[in-house]
Length: 294
Image (cartoon, rainbow, N blue to C red; front, top):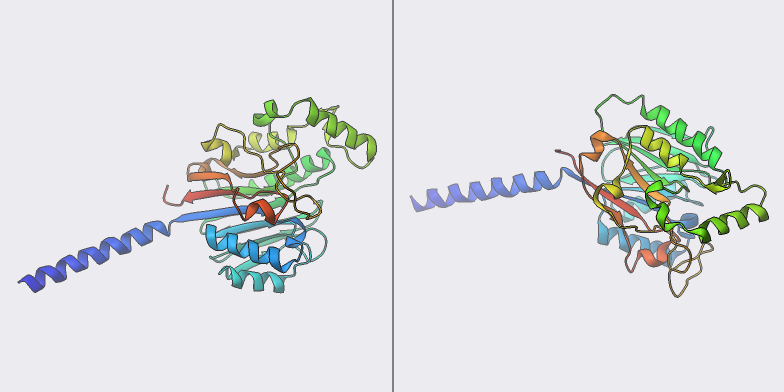
């Protein structure tokens, strides 16, 4: 009798554990990261990135500035971080890429009409767009975001969509953080460089991310946070040189945007600042965790 009771209790315990594991697997942890010129193709920095990945353990990573990587070398990196499914948009210039523990479905690479490129893939029922918009011209960014939103509109209503990456754009929710120094610096850049036209009629432009809001997308960071958290600068400058501190004007230009369906799934979001990400890139990564059962 006692043996039967023990066996029954053991069966219940195993069922509970199995159920908890199944529930845990219904969460999707996502990181978006501009890694600065393909991690500078530096072995020390690549190992730092691998250590960060092991520490954070994301299910999906969206990557920008994968310069110097090919599909083959990306697959090799994927093996090191236990992401068996990887895709890169192109092999020249400034590619974007995605790595995942789960299969990529109906993926698409788009380079036409884009300053860099973007990727689309469906993973675990979630539609992903990985973007890297023009750094030099807000009007080009407006065209880019319009193209991405046009494709997103082709997705059946009610399905979760995320648009993530380096938008090179500022958000109106942060405008109180962008004082006259920010505007003055942008004006000076436009005086020095004819190809840089990031100001809109002499003012900071918020129209690019405004298009996402008009399209029904929500900033996943703002869903859960009221405070401002910059994604640039870090302890590394744009040339890959180490700094003593994160000197420079704090800005938030890296985002993960969610449509209404995906926004309901968001249970965590933020900017990752730690002993790894201070030094990997000149950008900090953003992240979001989805509960796929919501």
